[in-house]
Amino acid sequence: MDCLFCKIVAGEIPATPVYQDDEVFAFRDIHPQAPTHILIIPKRHIASVNDLDAADAALVGKLFLTGKRLAAELGIAESGYRLVMNTNADAGQTVFHIHLHLLGGRTLGWPPG
Ligand code: 5GP
Ligand code: ZN
Image (cartoon, rainbow, N blue to C red; front, side, top):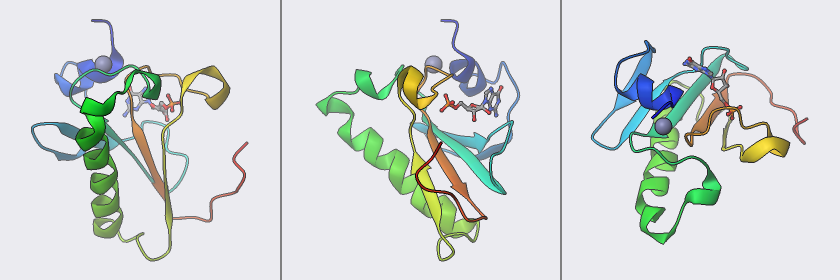
């Protein structure tokens, strides 16, 4: 499958890992939009939030709990952070393997652009 993030999970494309277990991989975004910008992904290919179903509930919960834990470990839990998944064109999704952005380390604008 021609998926950038599946290739990162497989080690075929280099990345800077922050955490991994049997289901989840977290690595630094190549074009960080904040001092801390981590991508948290399932190792299993899922193209977008639109492709999630009830059987994925625990996996999605694990992505968020990984984000929470990494925010604490990286020292941004108290200052604040954002966990966000972009879906399809209007949200600016460019890689069609779901990824939870963990952004923090600066004041983040709201609403996003
Ligand atoms: P999206 O716009 O789909 O929500 O986010 C895709 C993210 O993947 C972007 O923030 C982009 O910088 C990041 N990205 C794209 N290609 C690579 C890559 O090869 N390596 C890493 N680490 N991040 C990437
Ligand atoms: Zn994939």
